[in-house]
Image (tube, rainbow, N blue to C red; front, side, top):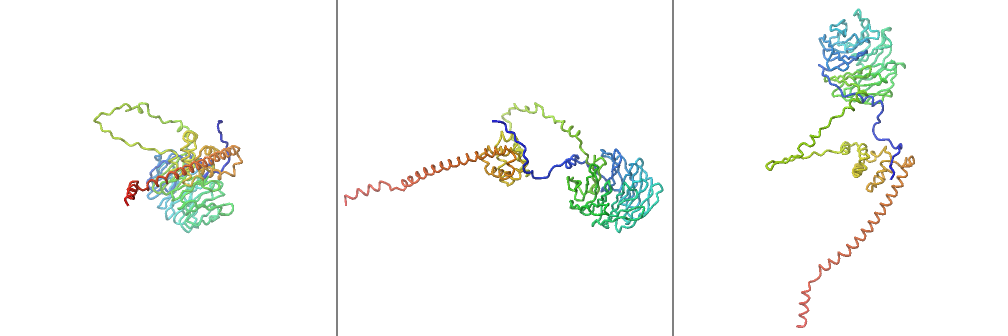
Length: 510
């Protein structure tokens, strides 16, 4: 018989999510490295220049970590109360941070003592950042104001008090040093222009704003608050483009990747969502606790997440070289002496033998059936070695899927191999009919399928003839059994011959 080579035919698609290149890109991140901090992590910021160290603001200190270090390479602890909003300057040499006491401190990365201290806010300063010129600092406070400071002279340049609640979000423009965006708990997002000294655009988010983010082109603005992530078009006067509601708790942070400007959002529901350019979720990261802050390296090599329990979770990208190294390392198996050890041991007469039950391991298809992975279980059962050497296993899996009512889902998206197998099995008539009903619209696309259908008709014809012959044999057997049973019953109920002889001997005497 000639070897069978199934041709590829575009059948019905498999059920489940499609694996795209975007999904594979985000799946290359390794398992997270956990680093314990002294308190809830409120801000993470990566240095814009290599080697892309990152600042972690937690409790009363700011720690600077290297790209792959698990211990801080520098610490800033000159805070009397909780520190907030540690951010790098564009050259990565200066760091600015606010505090619960209302002061803003400016640090040199190579030193420890604050270079400048800006005093003017009456309440806690939660957000700070450098403007794009590098000589001015903007801050947002719980005293409902935003202030701009001059770095060389440590003088306050302006104070903006248009918000009516806490200012908890800030994003400076990288293209225009006079523009920055703020978000407040008064449910508004405002775009300020330093040249006019007031806001030039206001958007209503509808919930307390936790984070604002500008795209690199600065034509789009992202605001997060409540369960919503909203995207605004600044070129159209702040028109709302899309409103996303993929989280089921408050969205606290957002960031952009350097490859394709993919949007990432973190929430108190312990999930990180990755959106593509059409704002569809392409990947999801799970964390151990609620997320307060998040940042991604400028080269997408590391993703750092800060949580409420004080744990810093860092994921690094796995490259192709790392994958090749892992696959090249083969685990060394046990030596020959391990297998023959104790093989010739003979117990003594006085020894007490304790038998240990042998653990039964489930087969791969049994594990997949147990996990309700019906399509993968059928794939395992239809492997070449299984269906040729142990066809009873394949038949058993198909019958089990049919009993569960999930065979139709498992058969979707198959090629001719399933029909080729079913044509040689006499116990899968129902499965054949289901397969024919499922693929009847695409049979004309493959001549191999047409030949298999003809062979299937022959198999069904022979099966029908065999059933008729079995019915005839069953009728003959029923006739034989019926002809033998009544004769035995009559002999059993006949009168004894002794009584009849005694009755005949009495007649002549009368």
